[in-house]
Image 1: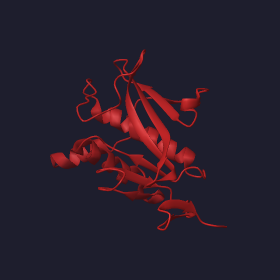
Image 2: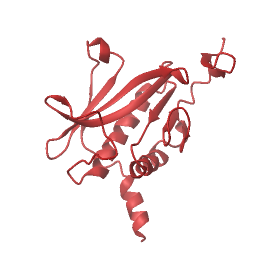
Image 3: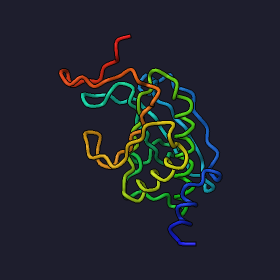
Length: 183
């Protein structure tokens, strides 16, 4: 068996993930629209995975962004995972598998909601991008319209998972805004 196929098989295995929990929405107005999950590694390091809405001129309403980072008793350790981040535990595959299992849980919970149009995932480097892409191809499949390798207004190597149940939107080239179809 080739090493690459072994790595691919290991990298897409969601059967060995950390236990995670969804945190009920906060009363804090700045976090009211966020969905937050936590999980702990064997060493006791806690990770926080957040899904939050984002919109703008070129980002339609109903767009959510997923971010994750280690969390300590004082709050975020920095500003999230970046291309210099390491788990420090030699558990990168298990941490990433857990983040993907959480992502699938979030997608399953939100797929029928009118407020969910698409999810943006921005892996911070090529290695993580390839890993996330493998997870998505093996576990999300045709349930969503998935776009890879983007060089657009949302950023290079951003993965967009579009809710295909949302056929009611179109991009108005006159106003350069996303709008809902008239019923």
